[in-house]
Length: 271
Image (tube, rainbow, N blue to C red; front, side, top):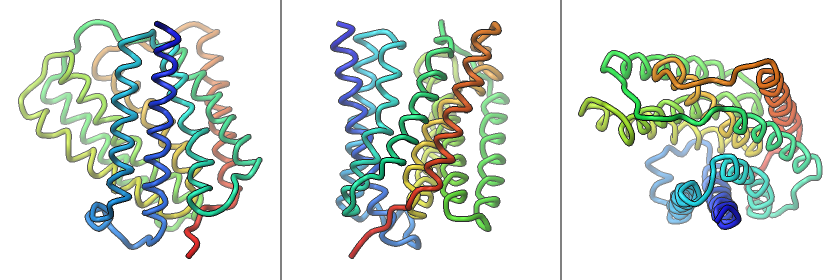
């Protein structure tokens, strides 16, 4: 059953990577296009369907096997996404891109393996939910403002980070709704940060540095969810010297890989 869970999770990563690469390809064709215009493009919508399929397969994998097996398989989406995106843009992936992506993936695996799995139902008050949304909104706005004068690679990373923060907030609210005590308005509040996060991510993709945007998203989303979970839901964090050292080393790996990706050639649509 564990092998089956790993295979399903790996297949989910492939679908997620394919969807992200297709959406980046469409977003990169014109940096001026907004989310509503992208939603009119069949290929962009198919990319979204592929991402949803990947997410559904990931959930199935979690029902079949332990988190310690499934989560590392999910990290493989970064390794799948770069070659797919390069192929869509008519070129081969650079060796430096693949090495940098593998470095980021190693760091992500280290992070996901040391974070304790949440246990038991959760509870979040209305004031806690408002605090969560306010913090996520302020951080996202600051990152968006910082991205405007930045270089292309840094802009892609900052926009993706803003998206990841909002997705992390969405994930935290969703976790409370699925397995906890919550207020009815929480359900109505979930779509707004998710849609803004999606729009910011498309802006990040449009810059052309897909590897930077995708890797930063992969790091920012779960770390934000873990932070909100610890602060607002009382969920456990890694403890002990070994765990803290592992977390530090993993973050260094992920950061070094992202910096290396920023130095590679950006993806641009070729007509």
